[in-house]
Amino acid sequence: MRPSLLLLLCSCSSSPAAPIDASSDDVGQSDSTADVTSNDVIVDGGDSRNDILGTFDMGACPLVTMDLGSPSPPLEQDGLTFVSAEKWERAALSTGGQTLWDIPNAGGSSIESEIMSFEILHYCEGATLLKTETQIQYAPPDDSGANTITDLEVEIQGKKVGVSVTRGYVPSPMPFGVTEAKALLEKKLIGVNRSSMRVLAQDKWVKQILHVFVASQSAHDAVAQAWPQIDPMIRADTIVLLTKTTGGGFIYCNPDPPLGSECP
Image 1 (cartoon, helix red, strand yellow):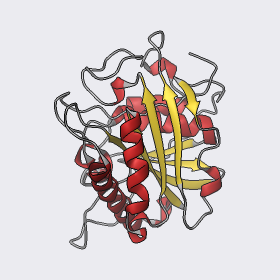
Image 2: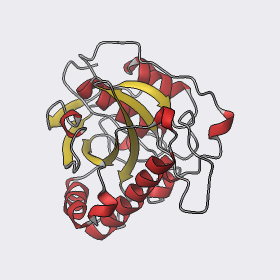
Image 3: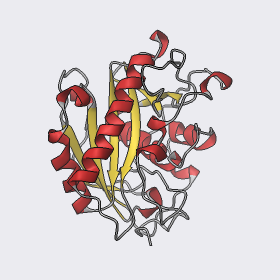
Image 4: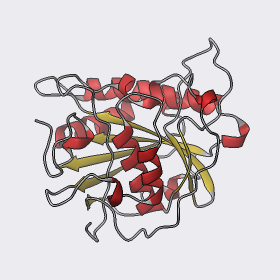
């Protein structure tokens, strides 16, 4: 691994030809599996934060810690570059990342993105993993809105924080402009707000982070332009973290291309 900072997030689609949308990431899933999984708290092993897979090439740590107490968190931005000498493997991850690697999620194709979101927050914010998506407890499903769930719960500076992950990506030549970015953000933010309403007291977080991964500058710009156009009631107090990857095709498509490569 490299001593420089990095960010990784992945959410691989089940088919390289299909566009990735909110429904393929776990914030849009039902919590129907939550009652059959363990509720044990998972604690990161306190491993070193001096290394991470990939290299930061935009942004600086901390990324979101200062926003946890803000009633109107901004859009935060960073970038991560991967090279061919690196490998996507369990041994390259922190203790919390390895836990996410080992434990099945609630379904969908977002395991890589969930792991890499945690790795970034662990490296930049000193986050520790508290619970995976199937361990967070919610009120029973009802008919007042979507029964969405959050991907993971972490602790940052002694505060519980929910983290939901998505990818702003569609295969070429399909468009991903401001219109598509706005639709994705609105759907995911509505899901974030709904899961915050339903989470039980023992898992109640102070705030949620919506972590958005994009694979190109044009997608990055589309998300950044779309975000201020969204109704403030939908944005609520969710922190949006926008990560642009280079050479991170494994985050967006299956089968995973080697690190340093984009989707075919």
